[in-house]
Length: 252
Image (cartoon, rainbow, N blue to C red):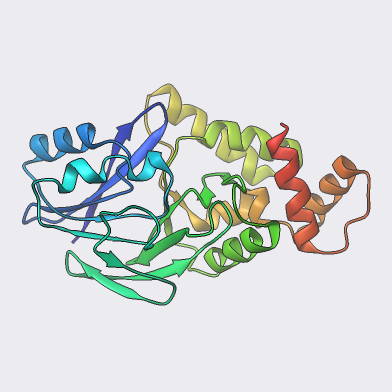
């Protein structure tokens, strides 16, 4: 049985810690080593490995320190950081803590971005956020739309472990795109209650993302209508709708 706990880092990052009853642990995207070391000490956990989704510093900045005196597995895209000793790519499968995870290429935010999926758990870095998606720093709208489509095809019960606490801002934008979405209105209320209590809003459930996240809903008439109104043009396909929604969010 795997437990997953958030480790807060920087202003809004989450480093995810996977552990089992035997006290073995893996961490996902450790941008900062200090909070990871403190979490391991407090929980009496032994670090066995690191998962990396992409090369941005707030996801890899702590890897060198965590591996300096540990002989552990570091799994990720070859280009992400020199400490990776187990490079993986789309279609690969890895085993950690007795569970199998599939590697899914999800370019868009960066070209090297990958996600890990297994046991209804999805570690997707900065590709899919609760209520949003990552900025297109390196990829194209076509790439990101295709990446999100791959994620959307996973089971609705999938728990989405993204890397940032952006949910309130993302849902405020989603409400501008779909002001009449009742599922979205209900989600906004639940998220506000969680934040008032100082609790994380993630992981989210993929079924909720499909019902409320505009970046997964480019095929919906309500999202298309809003995107066309924002762009003041007719949009010919779902990729065009997605691209305009992403441009709108960038300027929101």
